[in-house]
Amino acid sequence: MEEKEPFYFLPNEYRQQNEIWNCGISEQELFEQELQKYNKIKKGYNGKRPALENCKWEMIINLNNTHDIADCQKVANYVANKFNFHSTRIAIHRDEGRLIDLDNADDKTNTLILTGKRKNCYKDENSKKYYWDKELSKEINVGVVYNYHAHLNFLTIKDAKQNMRRAYIKREVLSELQTKLAIMLDMPRGEIIKESKRSSDKKHRSGREYAKEQHEQQETLLNLKEQKEILEIERKASVGNNYTKDYFIELRRLATKELKSKDELEKEIKELKIKHDKFYSSKDYTKALENKIIELNNDKNDLLGIIKQTSDNFIELAEETKKDAREKLEKAELENWLMKEVVKNDYFVKNRINEKFEIHGIEPIENEADKQRRERRNFIQSYNQEVKTMPEYVEMSKNRDIEKTSKKVVLTQIQKDRALVQFAEVLKENNIIVKEPLVADGALHKLPCVGDRWGENSGAYRLDLDSSPAGFIQIIKRGVMIEWDYNDNKTISEEQIQAYKALGQAELNAKNTTEQISQEKSKTHQKNDYGR
Image (cartoon, rainbow, N blue to C red; front, side, top):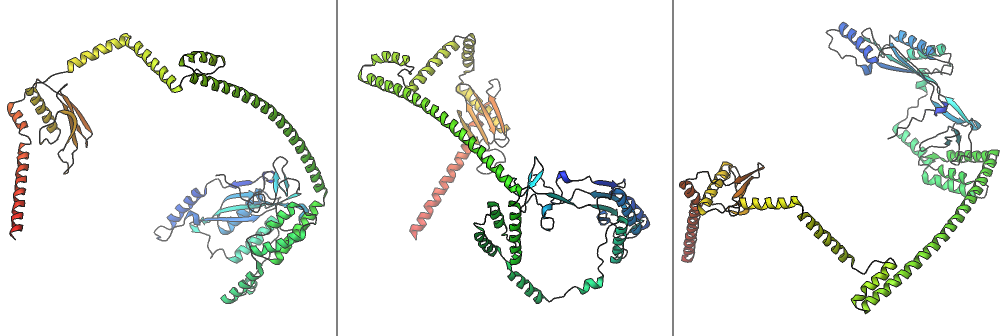
């Protein structure tokens, strides 16, 4: 976001050179040196220690265009010696002030404002001149009021003491300092107001008196609606009195949300009329009107030239469009006639019609989808024939057939039992619980793992013993997948095979026993119910 400069800065073309001086050491380093002295002398003192932000003191003095950095150093040395301060920095500002209208210098409200909601003038960036209106026709005779001043910075801790205290620096001391500085800088001294006069001028009022006074003052002020009513009456009265559009725009802007008295509003209307009459009766206004008339005539000639050129281009475009439309119509009529001929006659005339189509640059009679399908089919067939004749493809096909033949193994029933036992042992080694015989159908089956909650199956397997005896194991929680191949050389005992076949039999017997017990209990309950 672009940062805007403060309003009190002058434009660049009116700024003068600033001056800066410093003591050669930063305030932080100087403060730390003085704080060491303070801690050494105040050793054992448990009170609050000085802070840097409480030891900075700034003084602002007004200057004129003849003062320089040497004059400010004299003032800084005098203040530092008088109050036992350290003079740290001096900055003279010559880039602040305000712009005024020299033709209306007696008016205190004639300050030119260049930005913000209160903007009242406009700047031509090329000529660096200022005007009252956006059209840059009402030039302003600009004058500059500079605000020459200097900032003097001091560090108030010195000789292990905080010297900026009301006990040391009182009102009388500061008043005496102001008199002394006015003499040193050869500047006028401000009015001296004694404490007795200052206190005697105050009027102490009760809360009710203050509220009553404020209420009376609010009643005399005009709100936004009342201001608009007065301005509307003035607008109607000004119609037909040779006032321009700019006058009525500025008249409407006098209505603001801020409360103002009727006298203030009438004064603003009067000042606006004086300003308008003064400018529009001048030679500058007459010259501006002549320039505006010349500019309008030039714009008129340019506009007529553009209209003529545009009309010529439009006529040419219309003729070209008409010609293209006639050719398209003739072509469409020919296509329509030929399509009718195809419908009337047999399909053998299609070739003859296509020849006429080629003469006139028309596509042959064929469905677009059928054409694309035919081209794609022909391309695929030609590509497949070309690939199958390649030596690499022939060799790869032979290797694939050999590999399929070598992998295909037909197991006997005993080998299948051994394979099931081997696969079950691999499952158990990976903490998968096997409670019943495995299913070797090539599909995915889920089993519980050690540590699973009731109803959770985080293990899975797939086993195929028909074409190629192999399978894989998956543990979902651990993200593990293990491939398995049948090993016919691994010894499997008959006891292991019988133990595998007995899997699930005990669980099945227990299940049948449980069902039998539950059936007997239900019969007993039924007898008891009927016996009642």
